[in-house]
Amino acid sequence: MYKELINDLKGENNHSFGQLYKTHFSMVNRFVLNNSGQTEDAEDLFQDTMVVLIEKLRQDNFELTASIKTYIMAIAKNIWLKKLRSPKKTVEYSEIFEQQYFEEINLAIEAEKSYWDKLQNYLHQISDHCKGLIHDMFFQQKAIEQIQKEYGYTTKQNAQNQKYKCVEQIRRVKEQEEKSPH
Image (tube, rainbow, N blue to C red; front, side):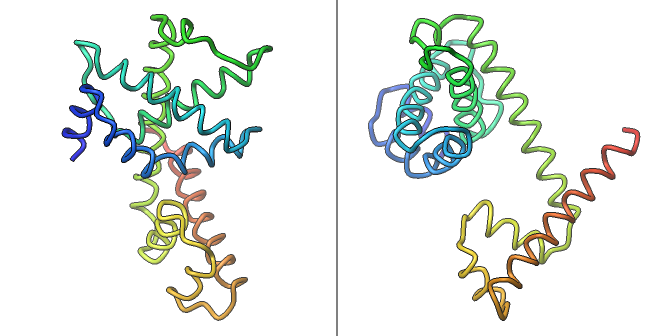
């Protein structure tokens, strides 16, 4: 599916933009809202991200080495953090297409890939119950009330407590891995 999507993007197919927006805008929006922005900022950022993504896809030597989601998030984070650091709070398009900028994007993509790889590794080491709960809450973005109902928790507070315990499992696995020599 992603191969087709990438080919459509290279060919300026508007259907692909809509599909990417539907599947990935909420992730970019959440990042912006958590980092001093508004939904309108996230909409602008998503557009800028798509411009950069398409420019990267059209480079002759481009090879997709991560998921589209990873690329979108890395590009969006890079642009947004650059805007936050800039005194004028904008990033000019000429800046976006400079070679140095693409190098920064590549580093951001590698860091994002590393983050997702590590997170996947941590998730494989926690209980199956927590794996499902974390997936539903953070990746499927289900509401706590829906989690409470689906998992049979008697109260919303019980669901919140279980979420905390599962996040703590991940934290312990992470700490353990950081302590042990590789």
